[in-house]
Structures are given as C-alpha cells and as structure tokens.
Length: 142
Image 1: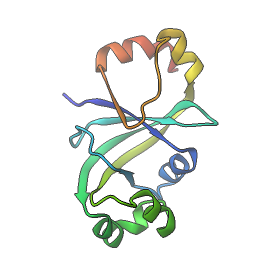
Image 2 (image 1 turned 45 degrees about the vertical axis):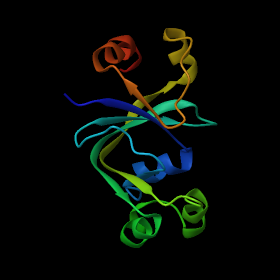
Image 3 (image 1 turned 45 degrees about the horizontal axis):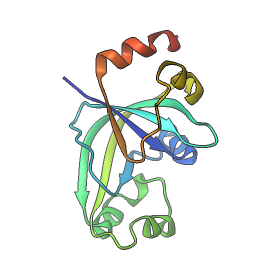
C-alpha cells in the first residue's frame, strides 16, 4: 500500500512543479518513500495551505555535484540557490515527481487546525495515516 507523505515547499517551487519545469524536489535527507507513494504538497508562507499532490517516481541519492550535473534543468533552482542549499553537505536527495496536480481548492492551514488543532506543517516530512487522513479531510475536498 502506498504511503501519504506531507512535505512543505516554498510557493515559487510549487509553481515550478505545477508548470512542469521542476520535476525533482530537492532535500537534504531522504524520505521513507517508494515509487507510487503520494506526496501531499503544503505551500509555505504566505499561502499556508495544501495546494497540490504528486506521485513519487523515484528517490535519487548522490553528491550535490552529480545532482547538479545530471539534473540541473529539472530542479527549478539556479546554481547559486542550489549551491547555498547544499553548502557544507556531501549528499543530495531528489524526489522525482510525476503527476503533479493542483487541488481544486487549497486546504488552508486554518481549516486543518479546525480538525487537528495541534497540526504543524513539517520541516522535512510528515507521514500521514492514509485512511484516517482521507476520512478526516474528505469534506474539505470537493
């Protein structure tokens, strides 16, 4: 059974994903994800909402240098931003995405907190229980 994984992404990168220009989401640590797992994309400030979903195609692990050389056109970031992100790191992780789709309506953080008052967006990843999450939020998704 595939997993639901919530990730936080800056708005400019979510826009690049939805436009099809960013097909690899960069991270410094690897999620416990497999091909077919679903990513729930939380767009950070100022939007503060779940705005999209995507499917994990594969997890790429390599050095930052190799990541840039092989995939720079698919990362949605310029060389300066990439180098700053991986400064002092010798491992790069890329989550290759397929089927990136916007939600019909964003699920605002304020709405999530009505159902789960203690909810906080993840710094890296948050693994969700598939059936209870879908049950809890089905009335928010039209």
